[in-house]
Length: 180
Picture 1 (spheres, rainbow, N blue to C red):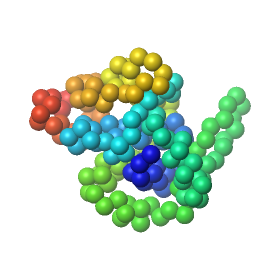
Picture 2: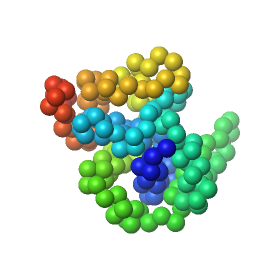
Picture 3: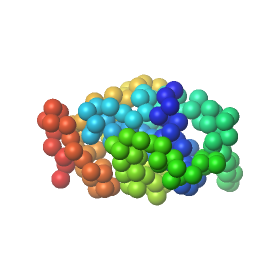
Picture 4: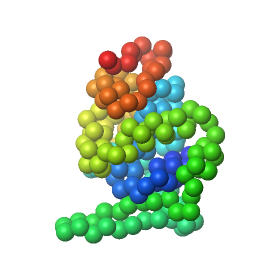
């Protein structure tokens, strides 16, 4: 688990409660966005695994548990008629102070862009979207590590990201033009 993954979780949960599935997808799309525009580097440094509801950071359970154990994250259990879900909210974390701690401008811009584009989406729509693109589709079995290289030439992904408001500047070495 990386410190960056902890910061990313706190960043996304510092403004409002985020459902577990939606949080996993916000982390995924932030890392995917970073990978596409940042010379194939993710923010978290995490591998993502193929799971039934979409991509999940390899060490997400450890990261959540660490934040919960240090009273930096609150876990809320919501009971519905036929199921329950977990929501997460940063605890005792000032969103503005947290943003100041995220020093690298590129990192902050990536997190801000991801939050702005996707934080009002439902968990199911984010999960569905994550299943539509090559990193997910090309992984054959549950638990396989997703290959982010597959995102570089995925025109459906690039078009979707552009429609959501992500600013795409694709690496020149990849030879891929932003989708129109």
